[in-house]
Image (spheres, helix red, strand yellow):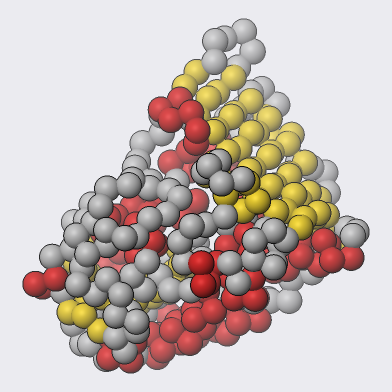
Length: 348
């Protein structure tokens, strides 16, 4: 059993709490929020853009409540600190939790900048030498449809990938306004939403040589709509779109379309049970239903298993999270100068 303390009690904390309830190896023993909000276990006022909408009421009789993160870190009964706080707080909290000898699961983006993320990665490397692990919560790598796609790419099930398009668009977030809608804190949709697809493209195809992007601010003062092209020598053609620029009422949609040599794969979250479709020449379109529930459960199951087995997580690392931030920064530079930029990561 892994004892978990969650810091932050907003939308992402709720999604993690619901996921922990489905993982037998997990036991939530502490909550922390400096404001005191939701420390009574009542999350009825918390909403977001993905996951089920069921109201959550946590039994606090066996859960300790803290307002001071340092007190949470000092709790000897906590093995893992799950950081679900605004991005600008991640550096201090990650360093504090690792310094206290805890495992750390930290929501994306790992930090507000790649420079801060590299500091976290260095601390995580040192902690790993002492048997403590940090994993960024880049949940799309664990989302069933995306896992299915990754396997098809790696195994070349339908031949090579010719082109891939990833899309993640939404109306402006209606929760956490103080953070999300202040671009200097959140980075806007580019860093908070679009980074999921940036990371997944990196996961599937590696580091692009160049990045071309266009975009604009709308609700946060930072880039809230971005369309990018990742250039890979010899292919594939990879494009990505991310947005908080949709009109209220649009909701949220994530999708991808990938053309292989012998098939087209199309995923659209708006199609419900028919979300993932496979098109093969001479055959009727096929609905694919990959195993698994959602990326939150998947990432948590994977990380807790790694902790229990004493092995560092490999499917997603702090270095991966740094690379995703560097790519977002390259997109931001491309938008600023209006031209293609070389992607030259500064981490080793």
